[in-house]
Image 1 (cartoon, rainbow, N blue to C red):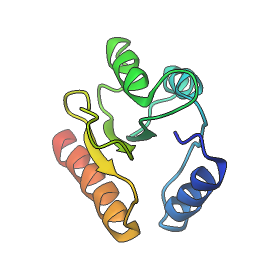
Image 2: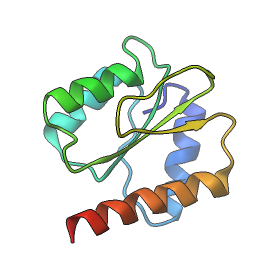
Image 3: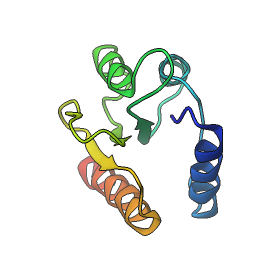
Length: 115
């Protein structure tokens, strides 16, 4: 989830070019609705979103059981954001190679946990 359309499209294009399926949305509320409909392996969300925050999204999804077998990465420009338990935090500006490495690590950890 990313509210900035250019960043959302850029990250989506980058991830799709790496072979990942992507479901881009712009708000926490849209993200929660999507998570209620469909299981995802990795949730990547910005912390600051219009309306509710990415933190709210993750907490609601956890309460509703939407992310039981989902890895979560939160991105923020704010230095003092404390992520919910089990959430990996990345700080802006993103280094693309580091970002892709973390996506790979999180999905590998999910696969290892499922094995």
